[in-house]
Image (cartoon, rainbow, N blue to C red; front, side, top):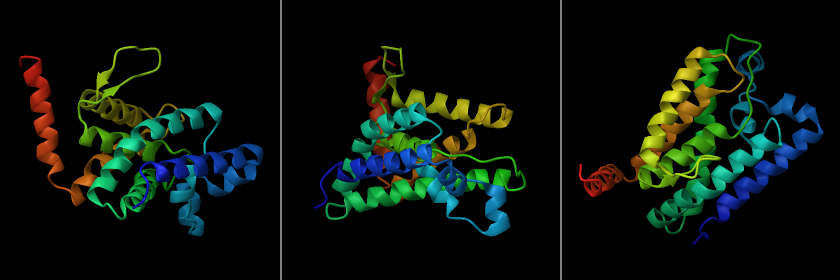
Length: 214
């Protein structure tokens, strides 16, 4: 049986390794970043995956890896419970496919835009976060400098609204489209393996509202 959270540590370690390599040599950022226009022109579709292990700066890396550390444990544990012998490998597959899924969304949006490129694990991390919300919808999520935990399902609704709004505006250098579709992928992918997650999700919400007297 694969040890719980072992794969999550490996993902974090490998992402840090590739990110620091690119920090020290910008060539790797140029070669590995998600660049839809270049992918169409030269068939470099490997970028859909490799871009998920790059980051723009140390704070970008730290924020994503802290989020992955906390919520990845929940998701890997769930995969290990569902697939006792291969849970860690299924979690790794989930994470890698999440990177590709998030990248594919921006590919179709920006494949005719030579000036657009993106890097970062944020799309895959959003997938992990939303998978954990599916598993534990009332889990408390804390934002920096805000000491009050936000129930996961409420945070999820706000996250999707904000990502969709900012993706439509397109006025910053953040790939909100990848965030949005990464989150959607993360929520629905586990259901393919365990459809009972849906009634369990609803049941937890009903209990939460009942405790509030609603």
